[in-house]
Length: 443
Image (cartoon, rainbow, N blue to C red; front, side):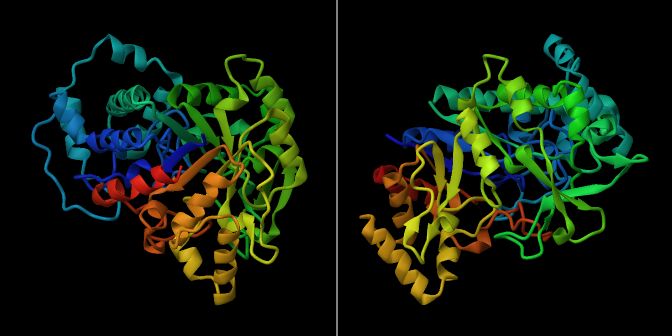
């Protein structure tokens, strides 16, 4: 039996407060997954960030937008939070701030809190935020304490319902971040200034290459310190999640660096931490390759595949790019240790991808699915049916593709800055409850 999962970012959960959070809707979503025998919930990054989940401010803190006012009220820290108009877009603003301040003023320090704030990384974050926003450092320590309390409760509940959480580890932090402020030596700089920006050469998503507005690592310095900077991060993430999706796995083999101010086409590759890092990481016998899913989509060379397969990491394939409509084959359907997705958070939804194909390719796709005994008249569910027939061991589907939505619900266009990225959210679960049954039955 293949393992099934659903992708839904926290900010995309229904919410009364403008953006999905760690409130009751998260528990409701877990119940829906559990009742339909869906094993995994992939949530995308939940680090503190400036709206860009894959450019965290800190790897050791959580996004304050995800604090649930309802849970604060349940703990008696606030009274009567006011509901906002229900929206289909996540709203990133300071609406919840008044409730956070109220909760902070009503909070009584206890032993659990005293133990929590001993964390060096949490204190670094609080100092950083205090210096930027001017509020008391203790306020930010408190917010992180509440976040971890609310998150740990969600994870415990999910596991009690036989649902596992797949967390996402971004490869690079933001330029201006706790990471670069307190660990600058691990990034490529010259006279204290960043020399390069991370990104990709021209690819499926961008003809001019992607620029990510993040720094790149000083691999030599990371090696000299026995990879402690990265190993600590991995140990931490494994406490937060059941499995980790390693973002941009190509970057561990070789990473693309673009001189500051240049186009994405002007970058070049440099060797990453590679085998030396993973050999050191796996000296801890409690850390095994089975805990990781590597994002190996896009511009991948054979050395990256060799690195993945040497450790037995589960890879990924996305049907929108793996099905060759000219040859009428699935280029990756010879691998079983892989997660298959019709589409992901960076791609078009299946509906929009299909609608943008020309007539001949649409007919070829239908023929391909028919040849594989995937006879559903709906393209979304035809592809999902194909996922169940493929050799892949895990099937992961976005909520948007379950709901047969178009690109108005797309999560992100890589390498592009716009007002729509990272904003799509559900208004409620009513349609999802109906459609998820078909996903379950296809298995």
